[in-house]
Image 1: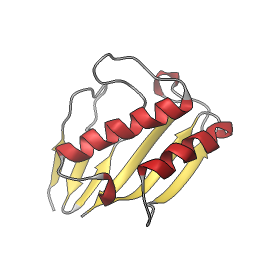
Image 2 (image 1 turned 90 degrees about the horizontal axis):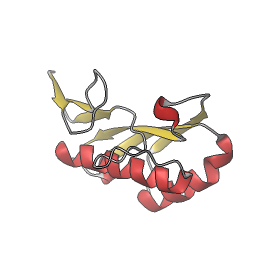
Image 3 (image 1 turned 30 degrees about the vertical axis):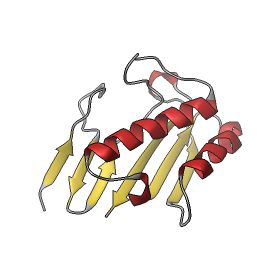
Length: 122
C-alpha cells in the first residue's frame, strides 16, 4: 500500500503531521501549540484541550473523526498531571475508549507539559 502524507499548517520540523496507509491514519505527536498565534499553552487541562483540537484538525484534513481513533499515546512531563489530563480525555472520547498508553518523560519539544499521538482506523 502506498503512503500518503497529510499536510496541515503548523508543522515545525521535517515530518508529516500524519501518514495514511490504506484505512489507517498515523498522527505524529501533537503538542499544545496554538496554530494561529504560535503560542504554547502550559496549564495542563488547557494544554490537553489544545492538543486534542490540533489532533481533530489533522484528522479532519484526512477525512477522519475522533470516533475513528483506536490508540493513543500520551507523554506527560509530570505524572502528577495525570488526573487533569484524564478528565479532559474522558470528555473528548466516548466508549468504547481508544486503547491508551501514558508515560512520564523528562522533556518534550518547546518544554510543553504534554504531547499526544494517535492512530485512527476506518
